Image 1 (spheres, helix red, strand yellow):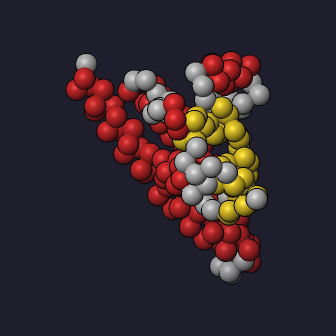
Image 2 (tube, helix red, strand yellow):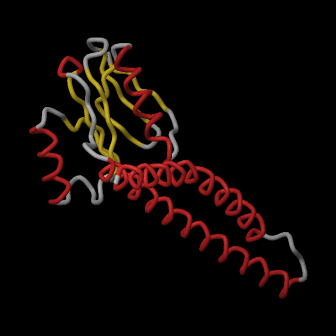
Length: 186
């Protein structure tokens, strides 16, 4: 039986997404496809797979990413789905623990990629806000009224900017903690 679940996970909550996918696996739902806020599962053996997510430096079709995915498959992992630069790996639970990172440096690299994506989103949102504020100011100067479409778009962009800012804070906090841990270990 095929089951599709619509669920939102923010950029900084990939670990919660992993936990949820692993809980779904425990219930007998194995991931087969991922879309924007959409997960498709095939009913199967409960707890058969363990899932891990990774944000690649390039899209999965890029030669470097493809080489990395082949390397992961040689270790017994399988790329079951991808969405943009995110890849979803799984490994049979009977094979034991499944971790994508062998050291703190590679974990830091992963969080840096996520933080980099967050900074891009934040920058784009700031530009959109600036454009709409400029449009609002221009409208006020030429028409003498504040209420106009750019004013409402400015408010929307401000709210979206706040949302984007909030979803990135946990990533930055975790990155800072891992860097501190790396310094202690060295």
